[in-house]
Length: 115
Image (tube, helix red, strand yellow):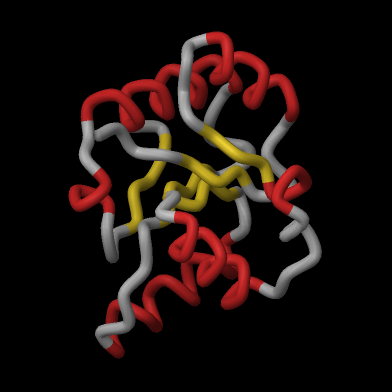
C-alpha cells in the first residue's frame, strides 16, 4: 500500500497537479473541507483519513513534536520549508515517498524535504 497524502492549504496548486499526473493518491485540504481547521484538528483529520499531512507550516512541526513526546499517534507529517525546496524537487520527493514507503514508515514521524 502506498502512502496517501493530505496537502495543507498552502501547498501550491502546481504541485497538486503534477503529483496527480504521476498517479499519487492525494487530497487537498480545500477538497476535504479542512482548509480552515486549526493545526491539531488538521493533523487529526489527516490521521483519520490515513493520510500523511504535507505542509509548509512550521507550527505543525510543534504539534507533531508534542504528539511524539506524549505518545499520541498521527499518520505522519511531511514538512518543506517554503524557501528551501523547489516545486520540482518537492514533486519528485513526494512521488518517491508515496511510492516507496508504506504508511507505517511515516506513522508518528516527521519527514523533511528536500530528501
